[in-house]
Structure formats: structure tokens, C-alpha cells
Amino acid sequence: QVTLVESGGGLVQPGGSLRLSCAASGSSFSSYAMAWYRQAPGKQRELVAAMDSGGRTNYADSVKGRFTISRDNAKNTVYLQMNSLKPEDTAVYYCNRGSFSGTYYPSSYWGQGTQVTVSS
Image (cartoon, rainbow, N blue to C red; front, side, top):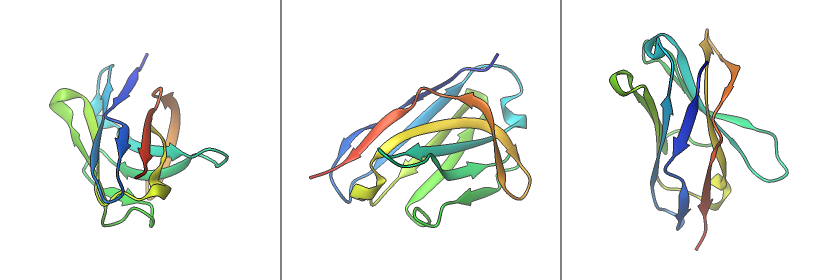
């Protein structure tokens, strides 16, 4: 059984920053790829950033250069540092534990999500 709990969302002005955290339960955290997805109202859930067990990363074009995914295996936690936020980044952000082989493959393990709102 795996539980993922996201935190760190909130309301921020355009150009601001937020850091999201996702704490995972279960064993062998370091062996798995982790990812962040987001879903805006009326839109499909989309991959934002992923990191495999070796530290290789993949980002959506829309966030490259602004967002950074990282992980702390000792704390079973994955982070998403979001800088230069834009109104179009507004969404519910979810973390996922999956696999990564050239591309990221999500599993059925999702967190409850954390709301990020970028607005003046």
C-alpha cells in the first residue's frame, strides 16, 4: 500500500514562487520514478515533471526553465520548485509514483492534490 500526500499549494501572484512537497509512504521509495501532474478546470491531467531513480528528469515544455523537480530519498519526499509562476499554471497539482523508461508511465498511486492559484 502506497500513500502520497501533497502539500505546499496556495495563492501566489504572477512572477512568484512556490515549492510543493509530496511525502510517500511504503518501502523502496528510491527505486521508483516520481512525477508531478496538474489538472486545470475543464482540462485533462497533464505531466509537468518527472524524475527517475537515477535522477534523470523530464519536463513539459511549458515549465522548462521555471520548474525544478527534486527528491530526498532519506525523507521519501519529492519536491516541485515553481518559479516565475504564470496564471496559466493555476491547477490542482498531483504527485504520482510510476516508472520511467524514456518516458514516464504513471501508476494508479496518486495523491489527493494541492491547489495552486496564480492571480493578482
